[in-house]
Image 1 (cartoon, rainbow, N blue to C red):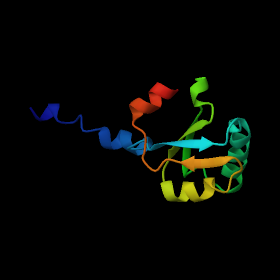
Image 2: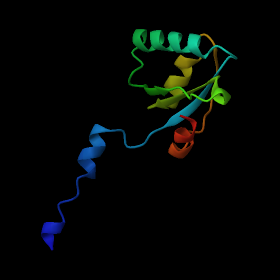
Image 3: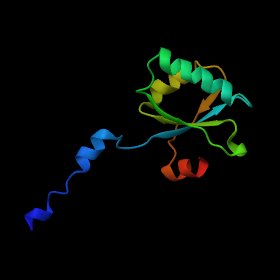
Image 4: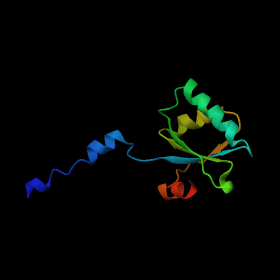
Length: 105
């Protein structure tokens, strides 16, 4: 039976991808999402935020026109940086489930 034991590789795969996805819902001022995304891109480059803001997704449905989804490694650091960006409105404290994220994108 010991030959069946080696499939203990999840440790290796988790090192290449984040263990958990912490997706947060960010609200921007009405009709200002495109402008916010431009400023976010600049801020991410200037302030080396690529380790804090891991991924940005934009829901396509018109219902979500003032929403941006962010995968964050550190909520507090990201929140303090995001508040400085033009057209930022709010960042929900509670992470979204992966099911909620996939429904929105």
